[in-house]
Image (cartoon, rainbow, N blue to C red):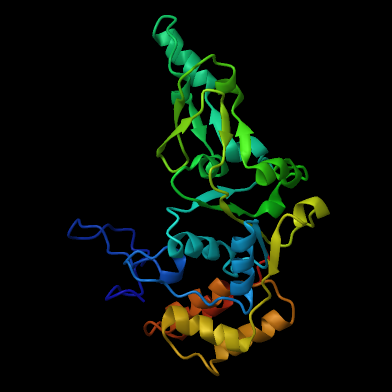
Length: 312
């Protein structure tokens, strides 16, 4: 638990603080902040063998496809790669069922440009001001160093998206049609998804100087076609066993959980096939070991914080 913040922050009194000052809230638990906030490396228990696979992907300059249950650290690895390799802030593209290739490459605000033209009485606003690079497009436009791109939950995409990305991943280039249609001899200045400026050639074609470090994550909700899989270096993260759970708890909470009843119960449930995530166990232990809650509160937490994720 955080500092001297009492357990009963909310008491259902319906009355604001008597002194008019806002109530102090706890700090966010350390494992909820994948990037270190205090300058110190944060703990991450790497699944056995994953370091070799990551290095293989780096040497081959191929995307890494991490498959595993929710909460197994797939996204955290991408943050750690960007931090440890000094490749700048992580570029993140979260995939939904409606995501298409161009979402990751660029967006063009044609309507905004039209409105500005009308406001200017028929002027011609700079088109580059209305083009924004997506996370993958930003990485391909980067000139000073490779960038790390997290393409999160690719298994939630439309069936065509992984295949639509193949040409971009293989050749490292793409065209921005609104820029390509403009007859210009000067580069276009646009903004990347990291809010930094990037110069795009007058042709409107972005050609990578560096192959980005790409991390795909998948929660095993679908399979992928062989052409996509053969371009990736793959690794499957299995559910942790008892020993690994103990290591994870020690890494994040600093406590030796060997023989802990909650850890033992959680491990048995994982072995039985229940859909539960490690962060649920960390949430529970963070609360019940931080201060005296009382048996009623502790029972409610144990029943609710580690419930099966496929339930209501």
